[in-house]
Length: 472
Ligand code: FAD
Ligand code: NAI
Figure 1 (cartoon, rainbow, N blue to C red):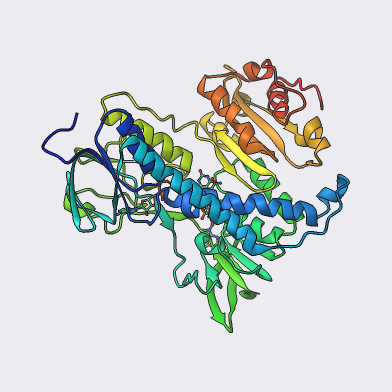
Figure 2 (cartoon, protein in one colour; figure 1 turned 30 degrees about the vertical axis):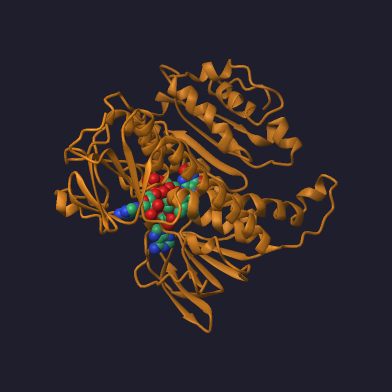
């Protein structure tokens, strides 16, 4: 298959969930494939410092919290937990080691060559990786993203006072007070970890609600839930500076619209105001490829960039910065390179915040659905069902949350599904699949769901679209 002019059919730059999946699929399709990765281990942000280690800490801290906050006692299990933070970190590191090692195994199994080092374009088909020069007929840019810095605030993960998400995963002791800058996904997930382990957590968010991009009702409920759990929320507030004095951070904040400034003292500050695409040092100028205003590489639906033979996927291109989006793009891109038809339906990409409870959604928010309907409320129908009325959630002492199904009033087609529930991240898969098959709310309402499960709340919310839920 390999075109003798080049060393490889495909060279993927970056071995995150976008890149490693693209490389494996390309190899499966008979293409001679290499993947350049500058990290010591494969798996990118997701496996090394993102999805996996954060979930390891969330899962472990959930047990500690359940023991400490009385949830277990409610069920007749009386324990006083003792935190062994080093052991908690060790199980996190072990999960990362096993999973990143697993990708190395998959590369060997599929005969993907790992080129260790930083990749830089020489021309569209020639890339240097460290000392080596590699040529390929197709080059896939899957370089991912890194933390957006806050001007004037210097992250120092070693010192553990001002940290980013990578530093916040590694704290050696539970901070007395932690200020989280940014009430988005990272701030709430990692803020939850340290709150559960005993930190006083203050979330400073520039906007008037948490979790931008999620449904309005979900965002409002999130604020209530996190407040109830003991997080202090400073919404519509901006951080203007952070100074470190005697090992403590002095965080200057003021109202987003301007006004009186104040200082919050903290043992640790987490900067989590978003991520930006990695294109620096890639030599895009050598191939004449420009980035857009947000620093992203634009592609067409097949993941081709403006430069022939150069493709791009994952966090470095527009769209939500999510591992599963990157993976699906990796598969589709490799299939397109192989001459097949690789498609990603960007309208149906679920998003999940893995806090307690979990917040999940797929498709349009109610606000977006209404906007799409030209502001005509009669054109959409919404069904909502509280988790309090779901027998399984109630039995499990998980009263918070709801499911909301948004449908088109004429066709009854499901436009969006939102869920707050202990297992919302798992529940949302059925909504994504139903929407992928063009389901109506009636299709979901008349699908038999096992009892007692949290998922019955999706069925009930779908029944509520017709105004006929059974259990409320
Ligand atoms: P990345 O995973 O960023 O991988 C890119 C790789 O390219 C990196 O390993 C980098 O070293 C390498 N690279 C970059 N430039 C070069 C170069 N020039 N030469 C060689 N190698 C290079 N998403 C979810 O869906 N679910 C979650 O639960 C979740 N949790 C997260 C938690 C945290 C704390 C963070 C930070 C992110 C989380 N994400 C989560 C987001 C997810 O990690 C990213 O969306 C995903 O990793 C993007 O995949 P990618 O392949 O595009 O890039
Ligand atoms: P984010 O975009 O989710 O949240 C950043 C928040 O910071 C926003 O609410 C924003 O309004 C706020 N903000 C921006 N500037 C600010 C300022 N100066 N002061 C106060 N607030 C400010 O970004 P986050 O949390 O850093 O995550 C980055 C990306 O990583 C996300 O896009 C997400 O897709 C991905 N991720 C996904 C996870 C998941 O799927 N569970 C988990 C963690 C990260």
